[in-house]
Length: 192
Image 1 (cartoon, rainbow, N blue to C red):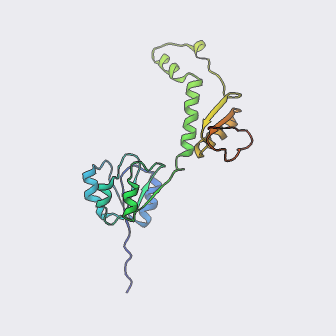
Image 2: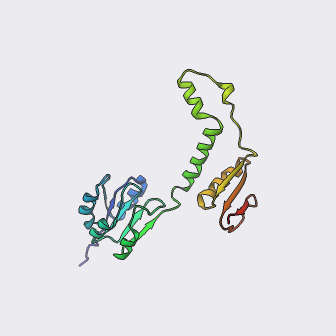
């Protein structure tokens, strides 16, 4: 007689990509409950094997203590500041995150903000809404030949540097330890 294997139950507390939810549903029972209070979370979490959060949902020690069946806490993102990792580890609950998940988006957003500033887009937008056409006062500048200083050189900074290099920018990085020189375009200055 074949025993039916029990599917793990996963609670998703914050929005994640639809494709991720679909992939989980292929192997697990997935419940999506956004906006749970700490009290509500303490009430429902005992019936779950895993929970997925982002930055909105907090998992302090008192919630983790209620998680009698929890085996893993997944953080869709890089930080773990909303999760009491020590309390989870004390209960044998694995805590995992996905630090590189939004690195490209952050690097691209950096350039969206840079372009907005060098091309005076906030001021131009305001002027147009006020029926002003200040074309001569809104002459922007280009990126080629400009210096871009990066403090630290983690995964996001490397993506920003790559994009800056494509625009012909002079990229300079400042960090405590110079681990390696990237594509020989970076000037490292070790902070003391």
